[in-house]
Amino acid sequence: MPEPANSAPSGKREDVSARHTEPTITTCADGDRVIVTVRGELDLGTDQRLRRALRSALSRSVRGIDLDMGGVEFCDCSALNVLLSIRQQALAQSKTVRIEAAGPVVERVLTLTDTRPLFTAADLDDAADTDDAAEGDRGPGPAEEDLRIEVVQLRRAMQTRPTIDLARGILMAAFGLDPDDAMTALVTASQNTNTKLHHLAQDLVDATNGSPLPESVQKELSTAVAKVSTSPVSDEDG
Image 1: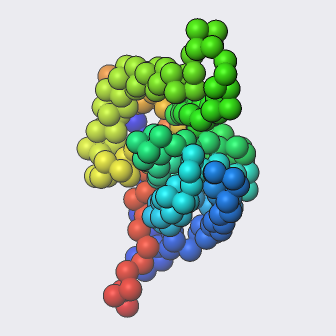
Image 2: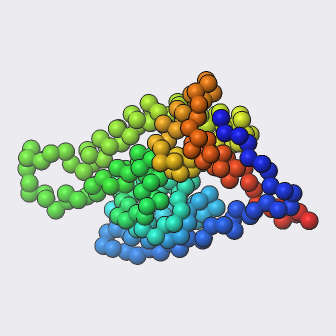
């Protein structure tokens, strides 16, 4: 089990909000889609700004939005939650959200959470110009392929979610974290150790039953817990 991190000296807590670089988010129309270019750092302090920008871009598009995230320098699970939420809204409108470019940190989050395929599926309307082709001569269409990917992802989530939720509960009980912070700590440790989220969760659960937690995992998990436990200095202090 990770050891609780030492608390910061009174009056000297680091202001978390001052650490991240405010992202720049620009949009431009590209035919019936909207291109959204994101640069900088994406975390809990910027997720609402990202959500508003993507919602606006989605509403202005006909078929959906294409994301250029090649310049994103930091990305945590709060940004991923925004992307998944916007994707669900897009599907409800028969639109798609595609990540056309992603930097290493974004790719790592998507890979570790097995969500990369959700943002690479073919556009629902890509076959619109092939109306003359016989339906019987085609394989599964874009909509069917997107549904197939969705089913695979949901099946995997059903298999791994109980372990992840149990690991999150362990962190909540051990360190007094709320559900969101506990999940953030798990995902952060998963990224920094290059370990699948459900594998790290299983290691943590096994540790409560006496199995040794790998030293690298224990170190990164302790650091992640300390990070989410640190709050900005209150304006009323002093």
